[in-house]
Image 1 (tube, rainbow, N blue to C red):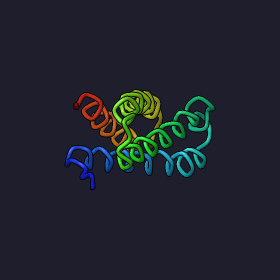
Image 2: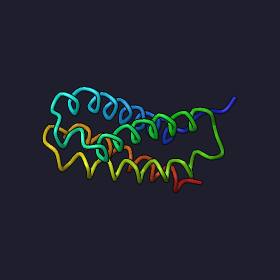
Image 3: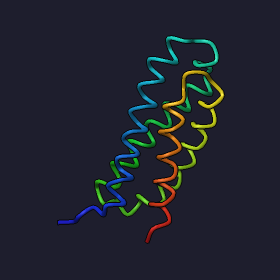
Image 4: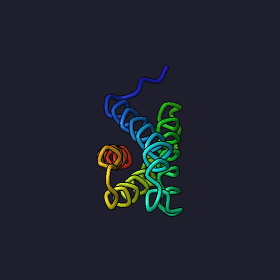
Length: 112
């Protein structure tokens, strides 16, 4: 049976945390505030980020040979989402979760 390294477990936790924050904040904070919070590019990016994080976690859990490459893409999406959320009020938790996930995914993508 394959064991997940502590680094991979930490990355999975970061991905799932980011998934939860982006999904929840998009469907609560953003929808409730309206205006720029629901601008199509921003809202779509938040949902894309949530789904990318969920998929990255699944690929790592599944021991997929594609997880490192996907983590690299996930990190980019998370950085873009953090930048978009940073421009809006009330999105600090999402920004933090995205940045933490981006760092964890970049480390996972760089590991052998």
